[in-house]
Length: 200
Image 1 (cartoon, rainbow, N blue to C red):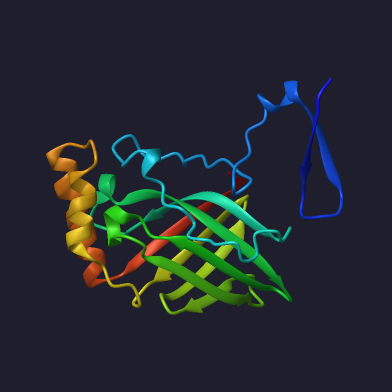
Image 2: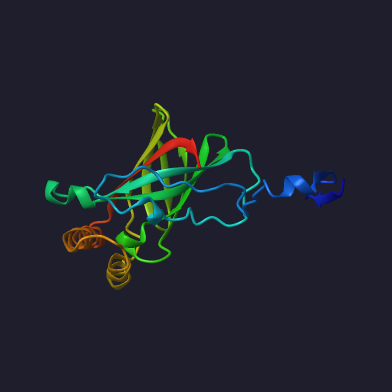
């Protein structure tokens, strides 16, 4: 039987038979992304933003990727259009310090609007984080991370938001509602990130 040798970064090698190759799919990230559950009227899972991460820190066992949801507190009439799926990297840095990285939904802020925050856990258990994008206060309980954020460092590009919404298979009413949410976020960049502690 023919053997193929696949070299890893370590000094060890993996031996795979030719018959095994067809059943193995390797992702460059080592993980397959799955979108988070969203309300029936929300933009679908295919709209989940990447976590915006690069190769830095990807080999750390303390760094975890999760599916989450980003919501904007709005008037009840817009609540159905105020949430979008995101993919998040949450990394324990040691000494009760943490780092949070993700991209805001394109339909909310525009293309490549990255959030990268870092901070420490306080005596009450809250993780207080900050970065160039803004600030967040995060709690972790019952398998869920919730971050209340003020992202004053994010410049919302409403032209890109409009283009992203026009590209989505949603109704005109949904498109108008989501654009109204983006306009509010541009004026008052308050949001809530909710992350389920289940790796994607």
